[in-house]
Length: 138
Ligand SMILES: [Zn+2]
Image (tube, rainbow, N blue to C red; front, side):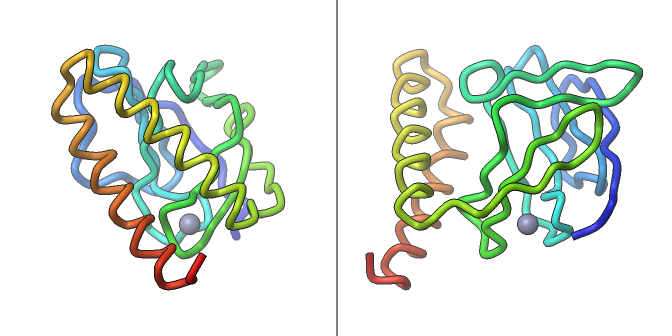
């Protein structure tokens, strides 16, 4: 965990490589992404505004609600406020699984709106999570 500060960057498309400490936001594609604040390198995707709200002030992002990284080993849980990271207790596996279920439910809504590229992202996440669940035997 670092005392890193995030900057906000509006983009048309999310870059393949996400720089550490940058929150990328594509209004057009209603998605934001960051390299996990813990430094693990996990690509965290946020659906904006479906799962998260992103605002920018003086080039620093605020993200609501908290970001729970359920689909990476770090299990980080944090808030980004004015570019600063506030660390929160990690979700329990049960909470993480509830969050994931909600996100999968949203992904179904996205399917209905015919966003195949976003569906693919969520299917990948759901598969990774299923693998994790079977590893933890829950
Ligand atoms: Zn992480």
